Length: 144
Image: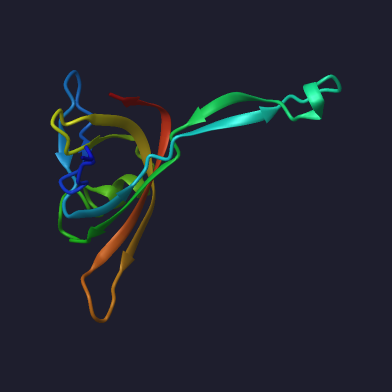
């Protein structure tokens, strides 16, 4: 029997920047989420004495890449809006703390700091008003 989990119920939360205790609010109407895209860069270190002429590499810098997600766009929703939400953070180049809360028994939470680098509304003739959002993660995430 598999121990696989349904992704339904995963939450993406945005921090308010308060200190000493930051409060996190669930971003409204988030649909599909992808990321962060964890990656280790490598550097080739092959030399004339490399065994058998095989390329050799070492790991260098780590990156948490991007988090992308779609949402049902509600222009007046505080977590979306131009005056207070994701669009506001993008326009003002605001770094913000985010949490990705998984729907497992322990509510595993990954926390990261990111910039909103893309907010792309989608207005189909037949369908819901939506948006695709990209967060560019900066620094080391907390993967607990």
